[in-house]
Amino acid sequence: MSPMSLVRSVLITAAALSALSACDSEATGDGGGGGHATSKPSSRPSAGAVMLVAEDAASVVWPANGTKVFEVFDLVVGLPGASVAGGIAVMPGGAPLAKGEAPADGAQMFAPGKNSGEVRLPTGSQKVCIQVVDGAGKSMGPDWANQVTYDVVAAPAERSVHFIEPADGATVKSPFKIKFGVKGMGMSPAGENATDHTVGHHHVLIGHGPMTPSMVVPADPTHIHYGKAQTETEFGEITKPGTYELTMQFADAGHRSFGPRMAATITVTVE
Image 1 (cartoon, rainbow, N blue to C red):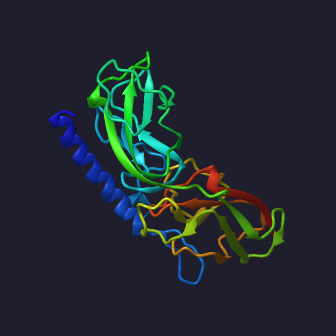
Image 2 (cartoon, one colour):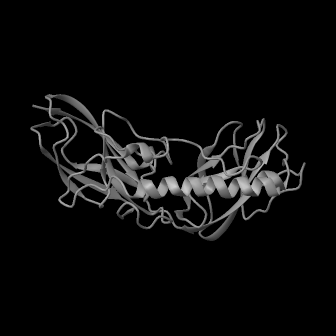
Image 3 (cartoon, helix red, strand yellow):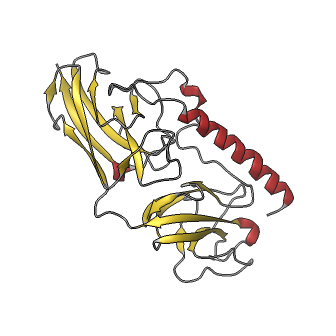
C-alpha cells in the first residue's frame, strides 16, 4: 500500500469508528422491555453504506478484523476506488498476490461489482486475504489487497429468530405483548461484545422486510430497537387500527443487521 493510501486508510477508518461509536450510544430501548426510537438518528452512517478504507485496496467493512464469527458467515467488502472488471477473491490462509498471479484453488470469488457474499472458513484463528482481481481472474497486485484475522467457531445446527408471541395472523389490541425467540446465537446488549458475531440483540421493523447483512438498523418510529437485549416487550408503537407487517431483525453490537438468515416476518391485525 502506498504512503498516501495508508494516510487515507487511517483517516477514513477513524471516521467510520467515530460513526459507529455514536451509533452505540443510541437506540438501546428502555429497561422495562419497551424499545424507542432515539433522538439523534442523523448521527448514524447511512444504512447499507460501503465504507472505503483505501482507494487502491478492497477493504473489509464487516465483520471487522479480529471478530469472532461462525464458520459460515456473510462478509462485506468495500469496493476499491478504481473500477474493477474482475471482482474480488477471498483467500482463507492466503497472502497478497503478485500482479498477474492467479488465486489458488479454494479461493472464494465475488462476482464483478459484488461486494458481499457468504464465506466459509475452517474453525480456529484464520487469516483471510481480500484480493482484487482483473477481468481474467488474475491479481491486480499486493497494493490491491488487505488481510484480516477471524476467530472462527463451529456453526450451530440452526441460526434463526422467531416470534413466540403473537402468532402470525393474530388479531391484537395495542399495546400487545411480543416475545422474541432466537436459536443458535446469544443475547448481548448494543455496544457490548463488538467483535463477537455469535451474539446480538433484537429490533422490530414495522412495514419493512429483512435488512441485508451489515446494514445499520435506522432509529425511527418504524425501526424499534431493543438494545438492552430484551426478550419480550409490551409493544405500543402501533396506535391506529389496521393490518401490519412486523419483522424481527437480529443485529450486532453496532446495530448492523445479520441479514435475512436472522430475521422473521409476521402479519398482525390491530383492532
